[in-house]
Amino acid sequence: MSKRIYITGIGIISSIGNNVPEVLSSLKTCKTGIGEITLFPTLHKGSLPMAEVKCSTAQLALLAEKERATEYTRTTLLGMIAAKEALRSAGIDHVSDRRTGLISATTVGGMDRSEVFYQEFMDHPDKGRMRDIVNHDCGDSTERIATELGVRHLVSTISTACSSSANTIMFGADLIRQGKADRMIVGGTDSVTRFTLNGFNTLMILDKRGCHPFDEHRAGLTLGEGAAYLVLESEDIVEKEAKHPLAELTGYGNANDAYHQTASSPDGTGAFMAMSKALKLSNLKSTDIDYINVHGTGTENNDLSEGVALERIFDPVPLFSSTKSYTGHTLGAAGAVEAVISILTIQNRMIFPNLLWSTPMKGNNSTLILSKLT
Image 1: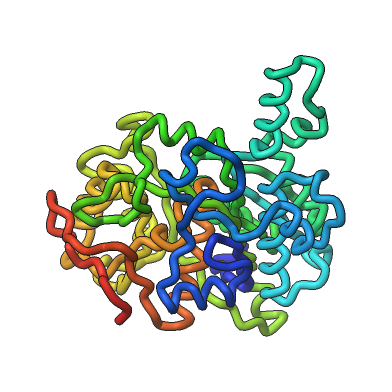
Image 2 (image 1 turned 90 degrees about the horizontal axis):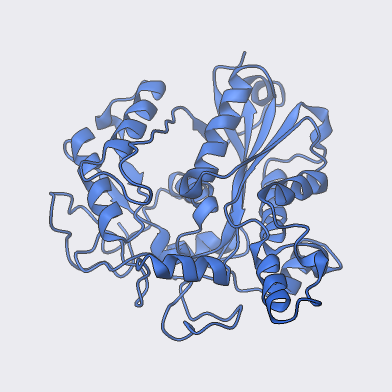
């Protein structure tokens, strides 16, 4: 049974870059990916910004080395691109040499295609192409990514809203620790769709100016899309193959405060419990933490609740920032996207600041938000 879990490879595609080097360059230069909607027609174009990957679906197919884009959803193509980069980063040519599994997260699934079908079908019941809905379910993208990578040992999908890809990392690590796999590819992928945009707009939590997390004048989140995957390997593999890991995964935790369907508790119970579990598992003290990449959606509720949770655990609260002001909220991919960015933070010894932040948030004492690189 492996007691230590190492991260040996990472891959990412987001609104600020199509791969790890491009994403790092944007982070270093404080370049946001938030801009005007271009991917689909909508009444909200010009009024609500989004963080789109700067490629059409046909261009994504080329990046994924697929000839016919119509056979794949945008979610699947994003996932393929990031997952293959993660394997290259880990120096893995063939996954069959070890017991390798894939756990992939998504919330949108194939909605980008199925919503086209339903629009045509509702206008004319004799229209609508079946090929646009056969890939609708969340598990479809996982199966197609697994086939592309050659993973057969263990394949699973997680869809737990914004925590989805964070949960894949925890689940993958547990499987390795329990001796059920030697290597796990974990992460998530989600694309932006009209359904998602209209749904979040109905909740009245989208910021028309672009999100500015932990700012007193924050007005909501900004939807984003992308994918990110990490390769987790046991210490046995790392030692036998003399690998140089990017990072070690020492602790993690999840919790549900069951306060509300879409809102966090005012006292930050869920975040407090999750962070407490992560510290306990890693055998670290709160004073050992130098920096925190917070969830930081930019909504009034989340940032206040998360700030309270930070104050309950840390004294003083260490430096922290939300990178959603770069990538937008990538939904099911968010945990993995920010895990990759956190690894880049460690590797480059740089903290990537909140963009658009100017006024300390009232309601608690968490005002240690960076306004510039240090």
